Amino acid sequence: MAKKAHLLLIIGISLISSSALMTPGGGSRINGLRRTSSHEHTPLVFATPISTSTDEGTSQYSSDFHLPTQRQIANVEKFARLPVWPVWQGVFLFFLSKIAGQEVAAKLEDVIGGRVCPNFFSSGDTSPFVLLVHHRHSFSSWDPIRYIQRTFFPEGFPAHPHRGFVTVTYCLKGGMIHRDSLGIKQAYGAEDRHEGKHVQWLTAGAGIQHEEMWDVEPDSRGGWTSSQELYQIWLNLPAAYKMSAPNAELLEAKIVDKSAPIPEGITPIIVSDEGNTITTVVSGEHNGIHAPVDCPTDASILRIEFTSKNQSIWKHMMPRSHKTAILYVKKGAIKIGDERVPPHHTVYLTPDGEELTIEALEGEADVLLLTGAPLCEPIVSQGSMVMNTNQEIQEAYIDFQRGYMGVPWREKLSDYEWREHVKKNPSRY
Image (cartoon, rainbow, N blue to C red):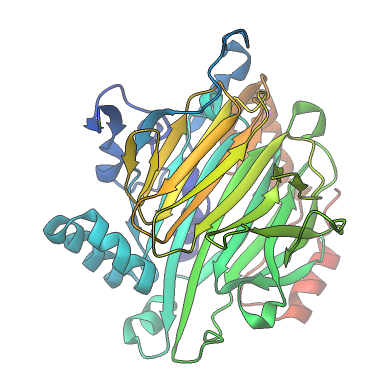
């Protein structure tokens, strides 16, 4: 039973409730803007997967004639932060946020971890992005509760299937150990032992099963704790590519300049001339520098770190076709236009214009920017599958049950046992 419950947690990011997948019409306001806050109290329910269906083609955008040049804030949303790894620290942070305020709790979470924040997007409005999850955890060798918990709750995400989209796992601290139904094993993360391989770009395509377990070796900084922090992003694929061959590749961080070509498999890191900002280009482009990752979906994934103790400004030009623009504030407070955005809030920008200006108000800040051209296709998501029709979703689960994506394995299998299992139960994709 425990294993089944944990499997639901793995894909539970999509399983909570349909109310968590849509932006409610009400809510409080931040600086005069509607803020959706009901997610902060959304109950955690692990149940039968919920289906969502929207038609991206129904979205209408205004003509480019006389459009504004600057992107502004359209809406600000606060999603629930759920206690896990370790649960007791997440519970402590919850009560701290009620007593001392959410910004105080956000600063401490950045240090100690203990929470996960799934950003449930309304896929028709945020196409091509389906989901964003921010993980911040820690695994301490001195924590007795950890050793009890992991007897029934594995430290990671045992084998589970995907079809029809790309998962981007971007490690900021710690790392992951990956094994899949193609027989591929990968170790990646933000520690010295990962040698710069900090992003996994997993194209699920026609179907893949994968296992992602936390790489819980102590941090390279020493000590008794393994700090873990990452983003997972679900990026939709056009219908023509949903049944493409699955693939998993690792991307390496590298500081670059405009004068040198960018090799394949690199996420360019751009340091501003003043040294006040560091921009990591996972996909897309910034300041004339393009990430070479190959993806049929027109999208950009950028991390911006404000490193100065003083106020600093970051500017970006984006294609007008990128009508979708989402900003997640991980650390610090920022300003766009006249509006202040505190940490742990998600910002939806207006669809028109090419310019974005972000100001870090209190020195250091850390934000994630997702922009993309809407696919303008129907989308149906259920559990861990993202397709175009309900029939395709049902076909995906039938193919999974038939073993076409391989057969799940226990996370406790040795590498030899796992490889033998994959040989006996090969994926047809």
